[in-house]
Length: 512
Image 1: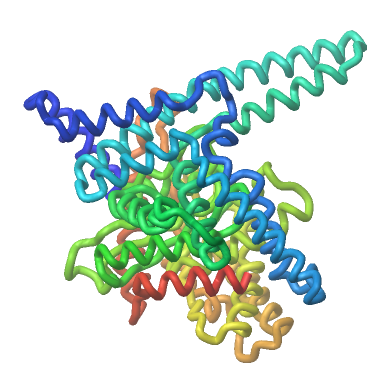
Image 2: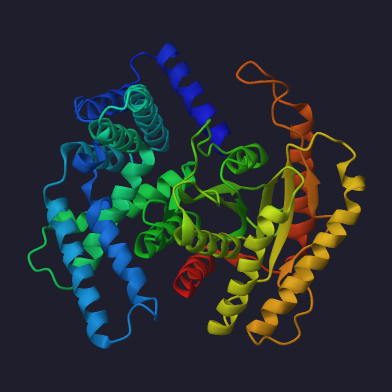
């Protein structure tokens, strides 16, 4: 599990340095991590444009054109399709030119990972040091940008109060907000850039002459690095939160390398869906001992996966694949953009999981009812398009921040009414999609209102940061984990392998 691995790495590293100060490998790993971080220019706020440019404008343009091509309503003629494809090719070529002049920080980071690829201990140590230093830098830069943004907002309010010309103040606020949004530079940005480097090389191989052997080798090395990181507990980004796009070639290559390392193991997939800042990542971390990023105001962007090994012989699967997702109703979107984004995200996330945790803040289920309606419609459509897709998922509702211990018995009537509305919704969706024999919600997504609903009290006893963890929350988490592993998982007769999971990701994304 992720946190146990991290603790072991830190403890072992600390112990090794204390007991044996001549431990060359570990000292070398730390020194290399320190040296590479010195290559980040201190005076630049948005270092992503300088260090990781491939995930910027070229990737955004490519993603948007890809979406247009795959929407029948947007691309109606072969000439239009050809034009968009040419633009996509052009963006990949621009990316490849950038790879040839890669920033020294990226080149040195890749070289370090490649050097320690066959040494799990040093590989883990150098990863933890790079993450630690990048996070420290991001906190410092973000804090400074936030202070500047708050100061500029105050200046704007003062200007409004005395009826001054506020255009200059408004422009400064926009600039400060842009700097604040672009300030974080974390480990996930490095791995996203590796994915774009890989995809640009693989795409351009067929029509680029004279590609250097060093660049071609990157397409072999980078998936191996990402696969090693995934097996050592690092999340792998499945869906890019900035472009809302899945880099399919990269994801397939990484998971193929995982298969090469551990063979084609059987997997149980668990995903989570819910509103933004409703405690999804915290719940997954507590359930499975992971370390998805959590913080006040730190919202997951995109979809990430982690692998959790299980005890051999106890279950019919070898690993649990956990998918953590960004929240619905995000403040980053509004209007039709929000609706389209939430529709896509809910369908993709629920489709990925054998078991989906629907995370609800409080007792009210109305906030997720429309999301489930979207998912039902989408599942029926995907099934009609691709008969191979087995989308019979299980669903588990978790209500967080419910303080009343008797909520389970008191809300029985409300749950029954909710299930009736879900059944009506599923039946109506089936009629619209011209699918016969669908009368209940559980025929599309397996759900038992008696067994598959849990109520959690708040995570903290009191107000953070000094508040202790609530034992009642931890107890409920243990019960939910038993429900997942003993009840829901045991119902499944077969489990997807790594190869099947690759196919499922591709089928669902292409279907969407």
